[in-house]
Amino acid sequence: MVPLLTIERGFIGVGGLLLLLLLELVWPFRRPVESRRRRYAINFFIAGSNALLLSALLGGMIVALYHVYELHRIGLLHWLGIRDWWNVLATVIVLDGATYWWHRAYHGLPLMWRMHRVHHSDRDLDVTTAGRFHLTEMVLSAIFRLWVIAFLGAQVASIVIFEIVFGLLNQLEHANLRIPEPLETWLRWIIVTPDMHRIHHSQASEETNANYATIFSFWDRLFGTYRFGVEQRHLVIGLPEYPRSVTFTRVLAMPFGLPCAVMQHPPTQAALQRDG
Ligand SMILES: [Zn+2]
Image (tube, helix red, strand yellow):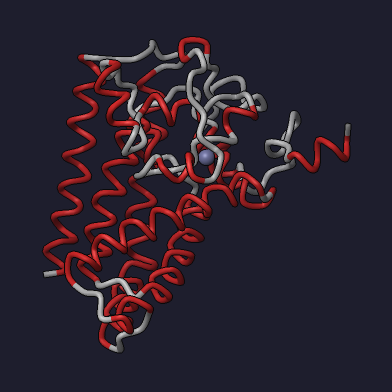
């Protein structure tokens, strides 16, 4: 069942990508500021090489660990006897909530922000941005998720279903897509929409330090980081320290280079008070 689901997950990911690429052509939200061909080349190469390297280096070990957890009934849901669809529901909600806090850590801790700024350095936002993450961030996040799953006691099938939903929502929220307002408002009560997540990619620190969720929008509403109602047309996407397009090698070197000229990471409230 699991290898089949893994293959299906790959097909669903590629299907989501192709569908959103098509929808972005038909109903685009804004005109790109950079050459689409150049961005696509960088983002596809990053996503493709990450997928190959991760599956070659860690893929087998991760799947084996998931099975060990299940076989030895490790984790809270196993101990409580919560199985099948209740296990799926708990897994999707808890892993999405954990990812919300993990995303906040990437923005709050300078060392983690060095990795995550690769994702935010994209000056346009579309479905290809969904795969633009530095390999170091992908590895660190995979290890974090292993710990959460060990604690939670998610079944292997629940993890695969979470990854499918998470992957599709990650693609959707980055899409350069115009969704009619009544539908967008309705969707935003439940899930993260492109209009909501676009604000997170703004250069303004009070906007980028908001809307961290991936699947459910209620995490931001619950923890006070929900932001909406800014003028979307005037949003400047990207990072102030990278005002022009960057090369592929510069993207790869971002976590290891010198601190950024403008600011290494969005200042925290404590830093603002200390410096101000
Ligand atoms: Zn972010």
